[in-house]
Image 1 (tube, helix red, strand yellow):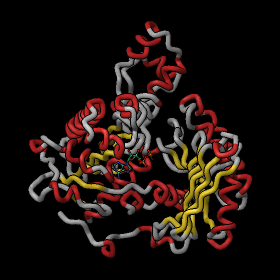
Image 2: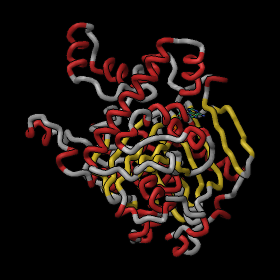
Image 3: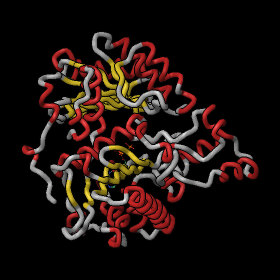
Image 4: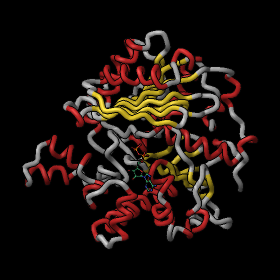
Length: 427
Ligand code: ADP
């Protein structure tokens, strides 16, 4: 099977005509990332990040970076809060470009981490929606507060355009009950909303759809395993465009080994450390979310640095790589069993798109499942591509994720009040 040339792929969004641009905002606890996206053509018109929000004092203050027309502008400024961060971002558009008035903003899209069981798709934001997102803070104390703050400030500063919330959890609201139910006392679970929600949903949905589009197949006909391997990492099994399982759970801590997160551990590790190491809940939260994963095992969480350590003969780094790959292989095998048949394994995000060694190691020894990687194809660079040899029954692919574009397109759909069926296969 081959990849269709760009010109032959259907683009359902060309039917929308001119929609101007969408400003996509991603508010983290100490950062604001933004991108001005053309939802039809798909290109990022301008993008920026503001980091170290709330950290004061000269050179250790906020770091602002804005890229437009191939030029990156970098500044160090005091950024006391998200309101100031957005004001600075809007100022960068005015000063460096493009002027937002000329860009014709159609909507502002907000990436929201946790939509609980309430939100199964993008919603146009009103006061009630903000309150409902805030009510979900107990489920996502590390993420939703910044999202709420970002939405509030943006609605004040950009009052004339619709704002849309796009949830990381939304795609996985379609999971079957057998996949999202944890086997704990059902009354306790129900009283506290304890279940699997799944995250990175925008990326998993986009990549599963993109796979179909570049192959010229219907998403309804494909069984796909998506491996989103960034700093955070998650896997999903998608049958016919609908997720049947995903590795992240109540929070983005469960599942794969990640940059700084442990992924799966025996829950009793928490009791053991609380009882015997005297660690508090907050200390355990920090341990598993920020001091574990590749960082905890090797001292680094960036795979480029990990490779240097491995090449220099560092045993801890080599073990970390093996643990990472072992976990991934287990999920690929588990998801192959759930799907019954795997048409495509798709690697995406920072590690998945850029680290051939991870891709080769994950697929090594899986020939019996019809999964293998061709060394030359795996080493080549480029956009979406097939890296398996011609003889396999499963295609292994690299498919760059475009979360901002996917968010921008969901914004257009939410504002227009329609979600074309073809959106699932949008590219
Ligand atoms: P997130 O969105 O979760 O912050 P990304 O998807 O941007 O993460 O992935 C970031 C990670 O990708 C880095 O921490 C690094 O481990 C990995 N990465 C980026 N570029 C490369 C590369 N050229 N080779 C190997 N790994 C890379």
